[in-house]
Length: 323
Length: 210
Image 1 (cartoon, rainbow over the protein chains, first blue to last red):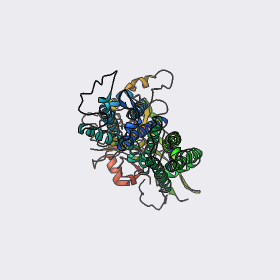
Image 2 (cartoon, each protein chain N blue to C red):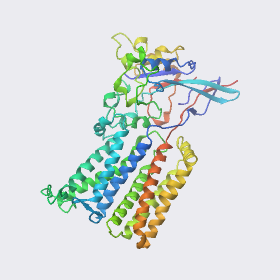
Image 3 (cartoon, one colour):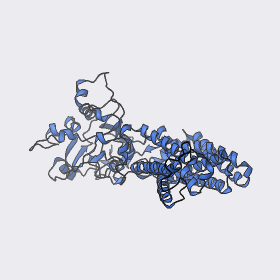
Image 4 (tube, rainbow over the protein chains, first blue to last red):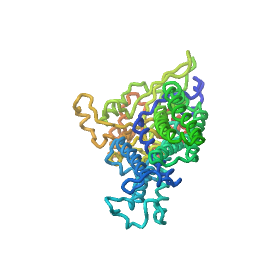
């Protein structure tokens, strides 16, 4: 509350917490899950297409398996998002305010990605001996101009899908722990790491050799993720609401955070990725193991981010009588 | 015109009449309170004070809950009242985590106090309110009914029920833009403060604390 006028009858207190910091309870397990699925689904498409790996990751019914995996993961995230709404049947209205709302922007990006991504691979669909959409002026591998345009738009949409969950938290939420660029940075890096591990696992399944560059990319993403987590933990630590969040993170969720997120979900796969980069024979095993570790670590990271979300105290100054 | 409230914290006795009146007027389910009174203790012995602060939506001039809404269900009227258009809300909860005053409440399911709705619950029950976000509306259903010549904030029938029910005359409602309104005179006389002023949200609830 703003400072009130002085009076001879007492003194004005320094601002105190009229309402203490309290935990948010709106977003929890469902949101952590769809944040994770959206990030990973978008990342799988983005990385495989940018690195031109999709041809070596399997084909099913003439369609790139990696793209199908991406759509399946995104769709699962989208369905969970819709399920988490208070009024799920109204989900299409979520696209109405892209000018100001990150949920709206993300929903639009989700739809664009699924529609254009699906359209991109459609010409490859082969049922029996016939590809019914072969007449379309592009192919599933984006080797024509039309295909490249569709792919570029789908890639841009995928990039938004990866980043928007973090921006939903960081942009306008009242929860101080969330209001940092470190949150979307963490979510993006975690998504890229899990996506890279997924691509590596698909390469293993298809007996495609995993390149050292992929291992370095995985290790680099995880190293940057560690840096982003450290940055978030070390800055503005006494900010109202964030101080309470950090205390809860270190105590109530200390074991989950330090062991689950930092050691098992980040440090261990990072070390394994470095080993795989220098030891090609270990790459298949490291890819599979990293997928499990980074997926679990990334999910717990998101869940804990939500669960330590405190509304800051509502503070104000009141007059205290002098006796 | 901009509707607002001035709360005289010196007069509030913490009886929670406003809490109950709001709850009944709006047929809120158990556990949902758009208006509540915070009981705080300030100072150090022997110079201590206990104070009561009626809290709720601050109907900010710059409400953070409105732009985050992905559907446009969270709206602000020209007279400053911030409300939720229930039939547009998808219940995503973004506005709730955007409000630093914690003034938004999701009504997951209608839940009655006594198994079946009481007459007052039945009267104000709105099935459109299930699964969506809810909040204080400054009793716009009462304010909007004011005929020509009646003044919300002066005529109890057209005044938010928390204000008209206050037993200590601690709460006042009126037009903040009208220099002759009750709330403008109180602001001029007492220069009340607002909560979380540093956020720059320009709330419409003012608190007289001295």
